[in-house]
Length: 327
Picture (cartoon, rainbow, N blue to C red):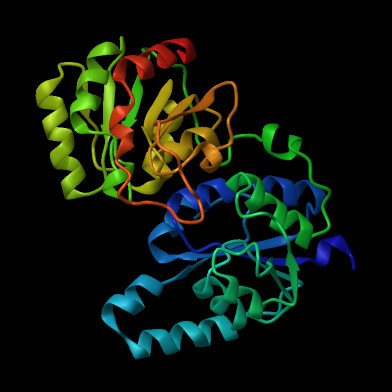
């Protein structure tokens, strides 16, 4: 098949961190298939981070959360009609491996590739695929994301595909007038959150202004508390996803929980420290400027313990020492 004719669909609906950690494949695909048309199917709430991406043909928001919340049959039917009406694809790749993402692929026209039964997060998803990849679930998550797509497209994989990436999202970064640090204080689970008391202590140990990134009312309340207990903490404005990407790309260092905004720093080739309690450094791609600090707990990634609050045992001083080396 002529490479220029390729139409490729990537289905990676959520969450933000997974989308950020998958988007590196756009550069890889474009290098091997420069004229391919790449569409990305994504949960509606996260679509803005991909909108306008120069390597994407189209971003298709899927309102799964809205359908579930509103229990709207009309919205469900219109979403299915929209998926079925799209032109056929040469390759449809489910890079998520969940039943919900697999069902989305079922309404598209074209051959579907995904993780096999033993590799997918939800093995039942593999029933929807024509071809599959066997990629160990305990492998580094970013490698998994890249490998399932490169295997689908017959692109030879090497770690250099990831290590030599350019910034994944496009922003203009002017010269810095002063060093700044972003602190990502929230996460999807309480046990993934570094205590606000420790964040306040960390701010006092760092030599540059610390901007507190928040995304919900409860996180804003924590930011208020931190700012009241540290003279070096500044509450950042509430930001859209594109604004968040731009902000983190301007910071000299991002320190935060295992969550999407922290992973943006890696995506933008900016220094970062990711803090792990109930999860592990499998969730990042470590580099000389992107490191992880893990609490002392043992983690079974096949059965994550959401009641593991061991992240509180990471000492602020230890984080600050690592931060100074990166700065």
